[in-house]
Image 1 (cartoon, rainbow, N blue to C red):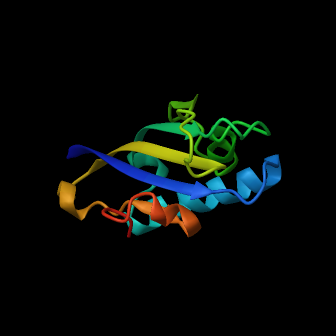
Image 2 (cartoon, rainbow, N blue to C red):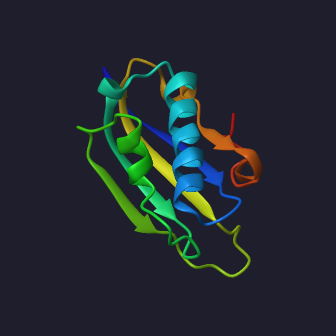
Image 3 (cartoon, rainbow, N blue to C red):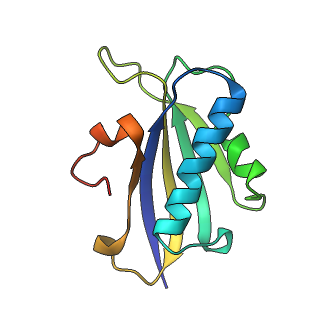
Length: 120
């Protein structure tokens, strides 16, 4: 079994804790489903949020999904002029038999414009 990395992102419509939980939860669920993963396949997850998001930690959504024994960390994304606002990004490290090219990276909604080269 190999260690692989899965990328993903979602743009929030507003900076509210409940909305963040919903959107980040949908992103994590899509990452797991599209890659045929369970929480047991997760090694760790890095979350970043753009500097305009203050309502909650994105990792809180993972805990609410039942991802409770996986190391999670949150960080602030770089504050680049002209960057897409209200974005939560994910970098999940997983155990998988899939080749690197077989990993489905998930960019929901408007965040799909961030990485058209790998978004599925």
